[in-house]
Length: 502
Image (cartoon, rainbow, N blue to C red; front, side, top):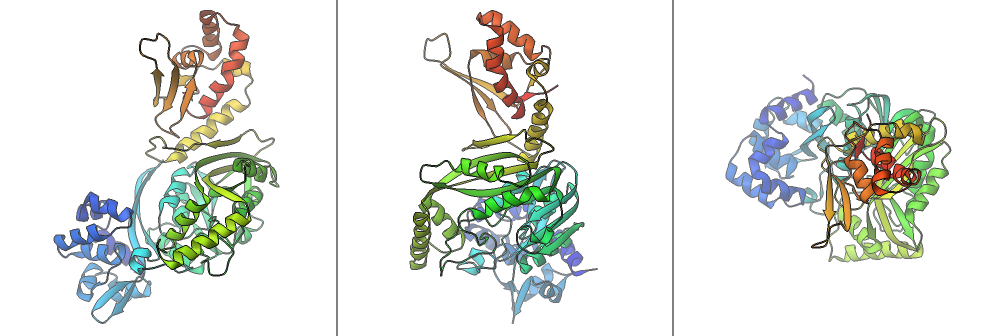
């Protein structure tokens, strides 16, 4: 039995799963851990007594040393020597201390539920101070966002650029026959390879290098990246964390990715990434992103969604805290000053965050969407990736249809769509009508009486043209004018999943 197989056996035998840990210390303690507080979990462990699961939880999740005999009992197949050879622990006299973070990770995608174990570097809680610059990040909010966004259509090849602990490469392996994972960090690649082996995932090739250099001349069906896009001052004394700092000025790394992605996509291939973009003065940052897409060497479809913005000070505070430097300390104040000096010198007032989806067009690009969707998402049990795939398919299906062909379609309302009507007390007519999407992006679409009536009549029995004709008679308006007014919005509702194609 290999060392990783032995470790896998010990973890499984101890019940070292998400559900197992939640049962061990309870929902409240689990939620506290997500907020960076481990005291409730430690108190629960003290009450629960000893056992392999408690030992592994204390050692690898809470980052606490455990007694040597307890560690031996928790890792009977691997043993302490095997754990040390894998780089998991340090043994000092009668105590065993963690050298890494190791925890279960559960998810649901289009193929159903699954669970892995993920090894990464010890976090701020275990280290008790700022992170080292070569820190390898585990599964966090951003990585879960990207994995949830990932399209899940079967493809021949995928590239995970900036793989870190390898989580996106693992997810990509569920729909791609072959995966290449790259990173500038040799340690990240070692941990990513360990995670693949620990979870029995084959077909991933790991390569060292920056951006697209390790795949020069190669193309892929799917590229995913949670790149090191964090805007960092190029100032002495400001830590340059490998997992988040790409070494470029401002949002140059995202611009560089967009410029280079098309050349590494097969026709019809899709690239997905998370990114930041700067707001300079009164200029619209999404227009800057549009310019990056327009300047690409290959024709690209693009769908860019801004999910949030932070002013310059908020943004700086967020990422200084992310590195483990605490507010109220001289170090924090010095770093905040460096960040604000950099933003002021370059005229940056605000930073946007969001999702970028690019597709190498097979001809003239047909999809160009740059939108702001701030606020809560809809309910997406298997992640947004399934919804995005459906949206792309719906866009493509209708892109080649003229208005007559589109009008001949018999549409149906998606099952998650509801209608809200707001009226002044005693009024006969609504002052506002909203069509709300329960899944997807949770869109709320303002509708007038005509659009609401059209959507309400989409039950698969009548064509769009027939509904428009009936509405024109009912409302006593010109049919051609009504069609010209409604069809663009109806097409958008189809693309966004509020209306379904036959």
